[in-house]
Amino acid sequence: MMLTVRCKNCNTELETQTKTQVCGCPNMTTITGCKITAEDLSQVIMVKPQSEPQRTSLFSPEDLQFQESRRARKVRKLDFEVR
Image (cartoon, rainbow, N blue to C red; front, side, top):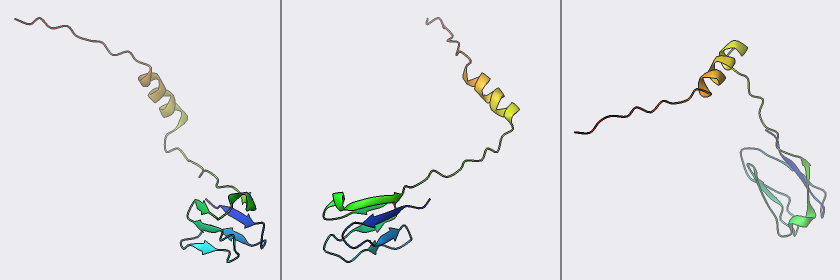
């Protein structure tokens, strides 16, 4: 998960890291994790958007098909007599 932005004022590219990064120009483009702030966000270009991590399944295709068929089952409601 990498996010890269560029400040149009100073052409500084900032990437996501564990610490906060600031470009230093009067626009003060700041990136913290996946949060982007600036004085004027119209002066910020997103170079590389944050991509979703690839999810690998622990289940085989047969297991996934079985789970999908189970999910489609109807729930039967039981009626009890109250005395």
